[in-house]
Length: 199
Length: 159
Figure 1 (cartoon, rainbow over the protein chains, first blue to last red):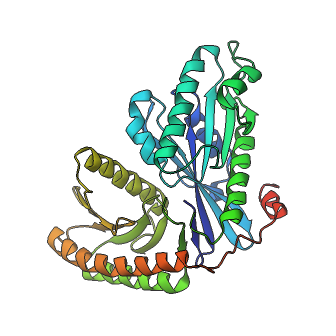
Figure 2 (figure 1 turned 120 degrees about the horizontal axis):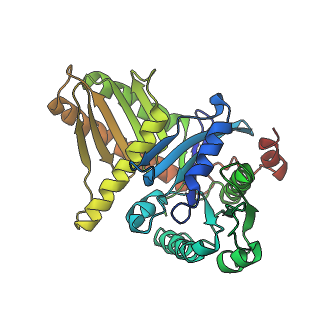
């Protein structure tokens, strides 16, 4: 849920990176963190296990610049991808303004992708959101791996509604900012539509 | 879904007055208010070397996790949390199930005093936020973003 502050002339929005375990959500955030100027970002927080698996969430606050005199800030969160952390995923989706689904392109992860996107749909519905209405971008990650499935196949399984989609290699940064910009744009467009009305 | 959170100058000043006073009356180091989604609303006290953005997000995560536990135990909520450190302590209070009031204090204060002052401040804040939400939900509320164009949005990304 975006937060508009008239006094500090700021608008804050929440973006959530969703996807199966080890698909590259945290890697997306790390790349954004590394490539963003120090004055435009806050500290990146990772609540992770000793094995560097996300336990609760990663958090990265970003400042994107001004729009009509309002500073736009985006709070980026990842969810823990492992199946048994579902209770935590539900919490992180609360108040979300935009969702990025990071799919693992490897053919052997297809089932995990499908399970995760179905889980996303269910958990959004529990909050009263619909995946078809909330600003949503699909990222096919790990395109560089030899076992990557063709994009057409991923699309037919994961993105039947033709949401905006990008191919990515998060470890090298390919597609990472394109994905972020696309979802930020959708969120701001949504804000314009819903402006002033409780959403 | 919760209505969108909007902050106007009038209500912000009222909230800031309560928060400033709470710092003094509770002998606290820092007081801040966060909405349940992790957005910092107001802060006061010794915040210069404090990463309030991160603290806000972690506080909201904490409250969300505790709320999840409450649900599993069929409790309505756990409205109060207390974290005791060696030098500093943190008192976290859910206000009106909408915002979170956080008080950081050290040996100059005590849990009893903090609890007492937080209780009074919570009532005041509850009233302010209720009025604010009614204002936001009222028809004809300001819509600053109704006017933005595709170009405005594109310009944000031309770097």
